[in-house]
Image 1 (cartoon, helix red, strand yellow):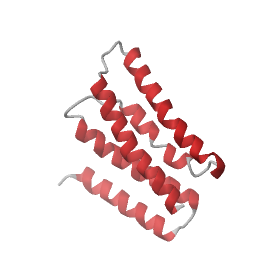
Image 2 (cartoon, helix red, strand yellow):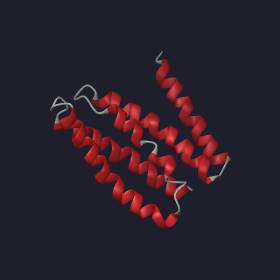
Image 3 (cartoon, helix red, strand yellow):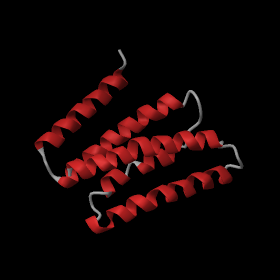
Length: 129
């Protein structure tokens, strides 16, 4: 048996139950952050066979799902619009800081995961909350 799969499945089940039972905006944000971290972990394990993603930035970007619920609504569009160029700046700085040991392929796979998983969960958090 693969205990990691069972544990991640239980985490997701408990998270969904909490969302259904406690309809608070902040609880939903925290639970969706937990789901985002589990999804990012699965994504990073899947692409680690192809490239070496920038894991610290991928996990750090998952925090945006929780933060988005604490920001006033008039600033939400600005935060989402400025987060993507800021992430690109950090990704390119990582390539420069590692003296090109981090390739642009690694950068692209990391950015795809961040946009696909984190931004999807952010918009889901806005819809539910």
